[in-house]
Amino acid sequence: MEVDVPLKIDGDVAAGARAVWGPPVDRVLYAPEGRFLGPGRRTAYAGNTVGLLSVAAVVPPPDDPPAADGQGQGGGKQILVLYRYTHFSAVHDGVEVCGSTKLHYLRFAVPAAASPACSLRWAWSSLAPLIYPSCQSNELQALWPRLLSSDGSNGVPLKATRVKVIADVGILRREDYTQERMRDVSTALQDMVEEPWPGYHIGMELRLPEHVHCACADEAEAADGEDTDCERPAKRGKFVEESCPICFELLKSDVAVWPGCLLPHVFHGECLVLALQASEMCPLCRRRLSAPDEQV
Image (cartoon, rainbow, N blue to C red; front, side):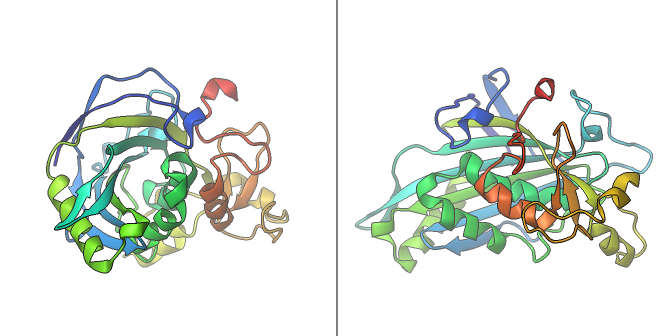
């Protein structure tokens, strides 16, 4: 599937407007490489929202390690998200599009010691303050767990170096909500996603936290001996006796470091999921996931 749409950096539309940086790009051809995962698109409902999700993953040959990206981050490991939402209203014979379709393109740099499969939970959580319309944030946050697999990886192989996600969301006016109309919205979305979408992108470049200890290492041992990209850095023991600044419990497992802070700010991974749903800023020093390297 290919989506050919204009790309415009527009910092005044998204809630995370200050996160937008870099030069504007005129047009983009979004053609997900790699293998699409799962039996087609996932569909889920949450209140007056419905979402369709497709995921593609790239797993390089063992003798073809990924090259470092332009900023030297993560050895080229990335999570790319194309997130599009469309508002609908009721008409006498069903539903129709009202207003413009909003398109968002987010590129998450994954640390070298992690994998996109392990980092997806943080990418999902950070969407809330960055691109969700504030009046629908609760419904859209509730939508994602219903679209994802039980472990949150959505079937992405641990060896994948790039993951590309296409998310199409329909939002029906609250006063028009009925279950039948929500089914009509889902049908309309199914028809729309096969065609190029009009509108614009809001482009964002972000860095994800770095695992100090990742639970997926245990998962890898159970996966027929397959190795994992989520390595345990040598500095792991340094944080064992410290407390998470969010929950104040000891940092014993599933620990992550916020990217780019002058001093290491370390949290439980699940605590970061909750923190990212509220803000893309470090809970301690307020450094943004979207802060350019030159601001470090």
